[in-house]
Length: 112
Image 1 (cartoon, one colour):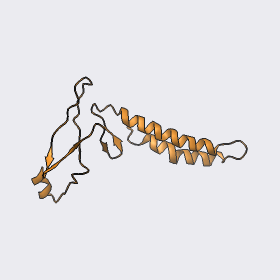
Image 2 (cartoon, helix red, strand yellow):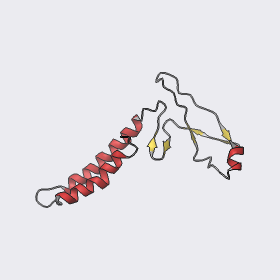
Image 3 (cartoon, one colour):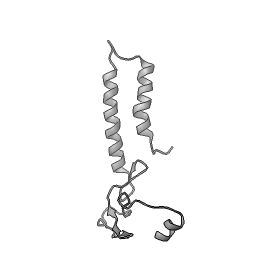
Image 4 (cartoon, one colour):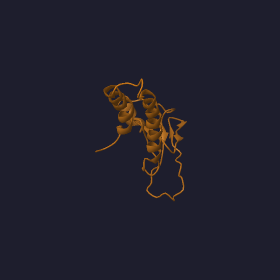
C-alpha cells in the first residue's frame, strides 16, 4: 500500500483512516484488525463514515438509518413551528422548506 500511494503521489492521513471488518453473520465476535501504516497504528471503528453514510459491520445500515431518522425528526420539528393556521407561512413556502430540509436528508444515499 505504501508503494502504491508513493507512486501515485498520495499521502493518506493516518489519524483519519479507520478500519472495520465486515461480515454477514451477526453472531460472529467483533474482530479488530491490527494494522500499522508507516509506523502509526490505524484505529478500529464499529461504525465508520464514508461520504456521509454510516457503515456497520454487517452492512445493514441500521446506524445510518437511526442517524437519518433523528436528523429528519429534528428538521420536521422546525417545520411544525413554521406551520400555524393564524400566522404560519403559505403552502408553497412550507413545501420548499420541507424539500430543502427534510427530503434532501432523507433521500441522501438512497437507491431507487
